[in-house]
Length: 348
Ligand code: CP3
Image: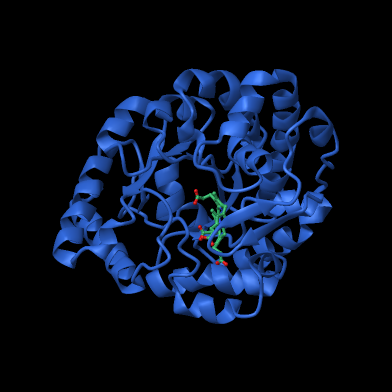
């Protein structure tokens, strides 16, 4: 890896090294909040767009150009490897992933086809193109964690209560284990393909893990996420582990093998630092709804997030969840400038 990239503020913060200023990027920074995204996506479905490396490259670069964020995140989706493996699934605008035949019993799990790295070759092509364009700006690869992907497969779509997923997890441990084994393999293959093509960090999205108690998370989910994170450890890139509503799980998510723990907006970063303990950086955690308030209300909250982040051994500024599609991009641009200016003046 080139030296200016290896020494970028984002990678240094992930490694808990001193930085000239606090690096910042936004989950879902590419997407519907950007008029230039809506323009290039016209007439193409999300899943089609993900298969076209030139389009993926353009969409991934859009927020880097507009905001001057310190990292790019590959434009793709957590369900892309499932579709590549052959699962009949669509991303329905305004709803999210919808699975034609939900996976709810042992026979359905047995029928899941293995994922071969060649089936996500279009992702590796996009990563190679992006790395050439990005120069010293790191590219983050990502995947959905086994539990969050299982929720889509078992429920058949987005779910508020995850009741069928929990019914399978509690009621049929052997089938749950088989499903987690398949998902662990898929996720590990997908992440390795991205890093081997040049991604310089990975984020494991366990978006819906916050639906679980600590006891259930620890017994039935964390071992599989730990296996995924261990499965990319030899590649030597920082591993970010994120979920929503995971205040009670932060210690367990760190212990799963995360270098950086992503924190949603419900737990302040100084308290999160206490919960994850030493040896981890933190990422987060401005409430994405904050940017809808007048700037006079936004700025002090950005500064408070930076201040709380000083309790962590390393801090990557982010939102506490993804950019809301109706967000004004100009406010996000001001947030990036303020994070950079205030943290540089602070000498962190
Ligand atoms: O962060 C980024 O900019 C990179 C791209 C990215 C997308 N999805 C693009 C996308 C990432 C990292 C994801 C991850 C993802 N996908 C997660 C985990 C992150 C999180 O939000 O917790 C989840 C749960 C999904 C599943 C999914 N895909 C949902 C819930 C949706 C939204 C449905 C909707 O229309 O509101 C999608 C579709 C999707 N993935 C969009 C984007 C930009 C919007 C659809 C579009 O632009 O056509």
